[in-house]
Length: 335
Ligand code: AHM
Ligand code: MG
Image (cartoon, rainbow, N blue to C red; front, side):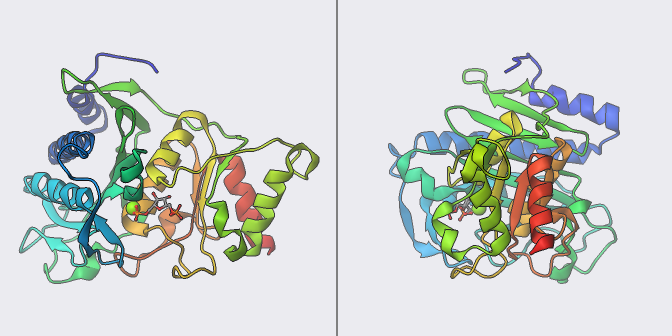
């Protein structure tokens, strides 16, 4: 870790002048950072405030909501509605698109959130996170047209996540590389601690929920089987495996030390698209990973090129160090 005194606000100002970023984007990123600070605080106090555990409700995906899922959702809505350029919010926990402007103009922002990813980890005190993605409307539109938020990941102008672990990190890209910040207790500032994050091209670490082995398709089984055969297998390499059940924590680990993460489609009761949602999980993470020199694929397509057809759509996800993603793409082609 390379501790600097540069705060997130100072960093954004220098990004703005270097890369001619819109001032409203800077305000919006500040609002997102504020939201992450608040959510981090709520999570740390969760057990004392009686905020761990489930609500009585389920979300649009039919999943039981944690109290903190609902709280994190409200925090993002409250803070990210301030910016006059935000046309709509798309949130994992809410079925409808949350339109903030009656007559959105060209260039207005569309913001996609997974407010609290991996929330099944809360009760057992493991890392969770928030994920965000920002795109722009190419033209002015009629606000009732929900299809206008279905933008491919390649149109993102910024994305990132916050991981609430032993410390709180904020990792952001505006399409000019990836930078990581750590929340400093006391000053309350996010300070630049991981400038210019780059993923090593090669790795010997993979992450997958191996309990789903019997449901996987052949290319994923082939990859996994070869990894666990280690040095005696065709990959001639001793692999290590990790699974935290929190995508934000997995992506953070990959940005720091390399690796590959898979949540493939399988024959389970989840739709054939896989588990993870395209617009607020796969796209932002794919943008971050590519900006850090890695690759992100569905197995058959670059994630950022997938044209969305619905805002809660799911997609298979393979991302991380380039060499492993390339191997997995090849196994999909060969199957
Ligand atoms: P969530 O958005 O409902 O929290 O689900 C997404 C999470 C990811 O963070 C993680 O990679 C995955 O679900 C874990 O799934 P599994 O329960 O199969 O381990
Ligand atoms: Mg999620």
